[in-house]
Length: 132
Image 1 (cartoon, rainbow, N blue to C red):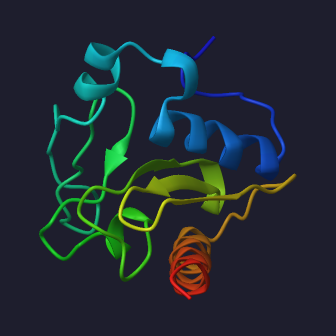
Image 2: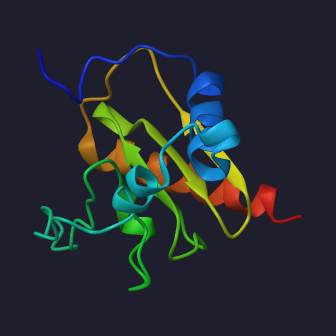
């Protein structure tokens, strides 16, 4: 199988998992593991020309103004981390706001542009809701 594919979860469970990574209750992750997961390891551009900002575990929002292009939403802090799934799914956490967000579907949108736009719009809305 593919190590990064085929996961099954509810959005609430994914958001809680990202909260656990964000706040590390009871040493959920070793400090070295969490620290390593926040270091960019691969930065090749994607199909839009946006540097990937991938760590061993996540896509990092970064401070280059392209967090929205990475699915984190407009307004995400440079420290936000998460990962988009197939066909528009997204999950992330933002240490600046303390919120996490997950949007999952039970189907695949075959329109990559529409699913990417939806991912960014929902993430931006979640950021706006969390900052109030």
